Length: 123
Image 1 (cartoon, rainbow, N blue to C red):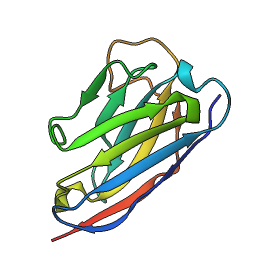
Image 2: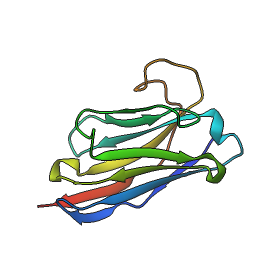
Image 3: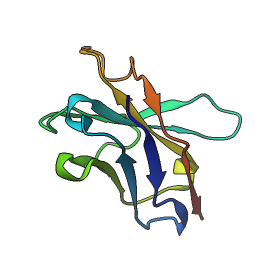
Image 4: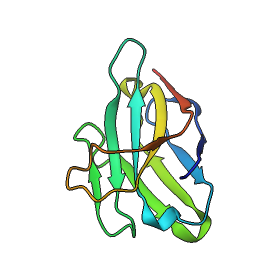
């Protein structure tokens, strides 16, 4: 099992940047594919980005492609989400997720979730 804790959220003006971090407990972090999801009030949770176990491949939602970058440092048990050119539509609670099983679909099958961190983008 793995415990996940997000940090780095906050209030930023449109066009600004934030870097989210997700720290994982345990010694098996490299066995998990990781992802970021987000959920705005009154809306369904949506997929944001995925990174493979070794960080070789990444997948992004079309809404954040070319603006957000997911990365990981397995030596530090941490996954990051660099968010640039932020828009008010990016306002949401951002969740980190881990997946231990081997699956083709990058959007499904996540077993562990963090508590979330709030990102608010003002106009």
